Length: 332
Ligand code: 3HC
Image (tube, rainbow, N blue to C red; front, side, top):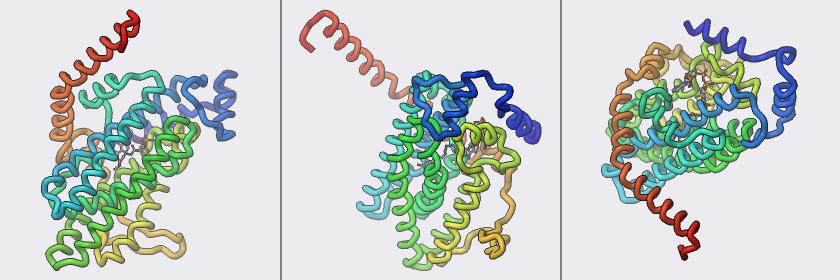
């Protein structure tokens, strides 16, 4: 199935000869590294691809708050609690920047959220796993936010202006997220044997799902060919995954932890780590909604949307009243 999809994906990449003048001019701008802005002409397929990716990225930020929210009241110290709260708050802001970037493509926030709540739109598979111990807060910051940084730094240079600019602030904040996570892991690994075992257990559970964050293998990536041609994707899924492994294994060694992959070994000839096979069946099951926490995550988001309806209605009523006053010349 995937091979055909990839085949279709490759066919989507239109050869210059098949492009009309507008498309050729557009592609020339992309190839010259000129940013595409909301008011510029763009192929409908480019707009749709960006809405797909940016909205799913935004959904990931919002849903991604849930696993960590589980540990705010259980943080071991007031300092750890305030750091975790700051991180979770940052993620809400990341969702805001990204929804705003998606809205520049002519789609409303309500449409995007309806797609999430109906299960039509995806969010990152990683957020469908449970957070079972405080060490998970460390593993998420270190591995998940660490992976997000590797994936998001190139996006600061992607072809769509609003997306690239949103990523600059996101990446600065992600660095704090990754550092605070690694700091938690360091404290646990320098702690008691039980604390170090907790950190190892978290690494065992989060390692492989973090590798899956980068998407299917290049051979199975239906969108990569076109997204690369449009310089939305500057590196392939496998290239960024390899970067994450190469960066993270020495960090695990420094912690005195073992990466749960018996096939992991440094390949001097390649200058990279070789690593074991990813369980793509698990990945596809999670994408189908059959991960450990998919239902709970979506239910929580739908409940939050329903519970917040009164507040949104009040804001709109207030805005309408202000607008009516302004129109009638009454003082605001
Ligand atoms: N979880 C869920 N869906 C995934 C996925 C994952 N880890 N990886 C791939 N997919 C989906 C894709 O969305 C696509 O489905 P679609 O066509 O219905 O959207 C399908 O699997 C095939 O994958 P492709 O590689 O062909 O798709 P892309 O070219 O879009 O590549 C991607 C996938 C690398 C995730 C890319 O979309 C991307 O770079 N997105 C921006 C970054 C992002 O969304 N990161 C998510 C994490 S955000 C985060 O971690 C927040 C941090 O603060 C913690």
